[in-house]
Image (cartoon, rainbow, N blue to C red; front, side, top):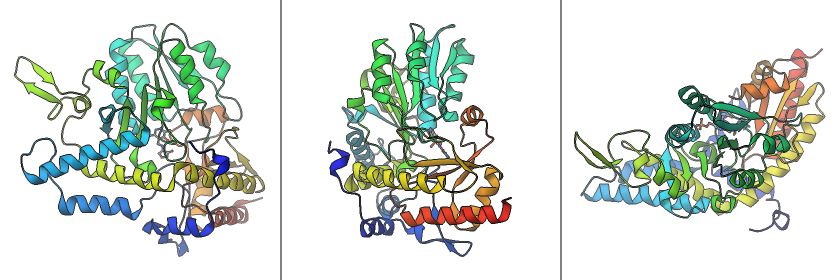
Length: 417
Ligand code: 7TS
């Protein structure tokens, strides 16, 4: 991989060209130009992705894996081709390690129910962290309720950094899985996933990484990481909603029982006995989101063409600039100040509730998320009901940060003491 230092920061004309790829960025809201800083919730889509979905329905729509006719064969080729491109993006060993799901949430539920539930006993443990999104908490709580296993939570410090020593202490012979986020959606923390995986594997414990906030911002090589499972959502990496990926090592997928039953996941069915399909189709019951899979592959091609390291470099600059700018805003306190961070700036105003801040920002055309970010335990850890979160993507600019800061001045005017 090219060292990040050797890459130049993309210049303004380059970013302007990227922005042109995203038609929605020309929208005006409340009479002002849209400043879209809610990329942690979902990213906008480039024309290439929108066109790919349109093209599929215009010229290639048919069901997959079951038609002798030309269109069905074409749809199957495009759908399976998308799987191969996604495998290549993640550097998976083979396309069969890519299971199409609705998103990160479904991927984690699949692993919880199919892989973990069957091999976990009362008194066994599931290890997560204190910075998880609800979708990497609740599926494990369900497994615990179903089996009598125990959920254990690795704490984080005041900067939002994982307590690595606590992690080393807490993993033990009863741990059946480690499930941690690669990047925190509420704090921006990038976890030291290589080290976490090394230690888990030394204990023979498989690791699931929640890549929802990572895959669009940091390079992900599942083979270099040696993670057992990697989950992400298409819509957070410039792709469509309703499509996501569970990467899993082939031998794990082979050993896992199906999760949902139905068409396409079988080889043969009688009332006495059903033989299941090979991986990954064993986990893809029913007609899949064909257009979504194709759109996601195009989104990943788009990211690859720009280069994830180039995007990372640009976003690192945005993070540095936004952090400095927000630190200078009176009465604002940043929540999440880890050393290693993705471009997410979460903050509270000491006198104004996050929802009120969000509303004023919206009136200024600035879209942010205000709330608990589906990470209520993170809010509890920091003793706040909610934060305002500005989360950046490749098309954001220094001007977007200036607009955010100007809108914060408006907050001060309206609510300030
Ligand atoms: N994991 C993390 C770390 C997330 O940030 C999200 C969504 C999910 C899982 C769930 O992804 P889904 O596509 O299955 O819904 N996070 C956010 C957010 O921060 N604001 O809105 C959704």
